[in-house]
Amino acid sequence: MHVHAHPDDEASKGAASTAKYVEEGVRVKVVTCTGGERGDVLNPTLSVDPQRLADLRREEMARAVEILGVEHAWLGFEDSGFPEGDPPPPLPAGCFAAIDLEEATAPLIEQILEFRPHVVTTYDENGGYPHPDHIRCHEVTMAAVAQAAPLWQVSKVYYHQTFHKQKLLALHEAAVSRGYESPYAQRIDDVLKRPDDGHRVTTRVPCADYFDVRDAALKAHATQIDPSGHWFALPAEVAREVWPTEDFELAVSVLPYEGPEDDLFAGLR
Image 1: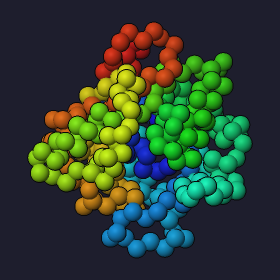
Image 2: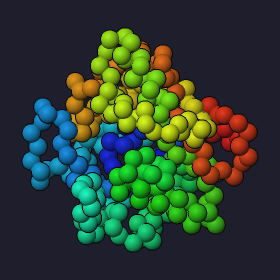
Image 3: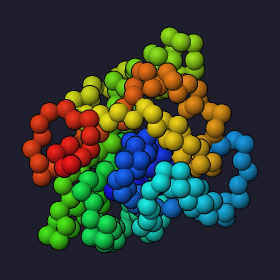
Image 4: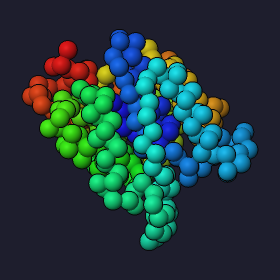
């Protein structure tokens, strides 16, 4: 079970390994906490009526679910947006990140008890990046796994480590050295200033053969992704060569950790 904050997160984080596991016959369910109603339209080729955005994001999610071959559930909470400023403005009343944690957790407990996942993925304590919905997604997932445990014990919880420093630098340098536009060029100075976080990666799942499925699922979210944009500037064959895995951090496990893994189901098969 992947627990994500918004529609499109399931395609930008862990989608290739998801496709790999689905092909192996693993049941995978994506749970999306919010509808992404406050997201910006990031595709310059689209003109979208703001009143239609929520419906469009549901339609896009349905296409991505079909491409990935997963089951899916909405928790039904309202997108919190990404308030910016110093100090940041208050969160919208009633949004996912502003409501009581117990209220936000209850429907995910129901999903866990119904689906009975052996493995759950979510974001780390920083949300992967400090979007209020991503941080709340982490809080809700960890609370739901703990509260469901008397009736169903999740064996492992992993955090996505999609954009750790070592990976970003490797892909950036590969793009520059081969003459391609780097997807990370605009933020590489900030990346270089970050402390090394590679130690957090415990599990690298080889899934390069499924990068095309990942990209197709991501492009299904047309309001969020410019198909000719910089995210697709680095050819897939270069990405496969330079970084052929999706990376995770084992956060909770009922099994002893026995060193670097290449499978989210290590010890469970």
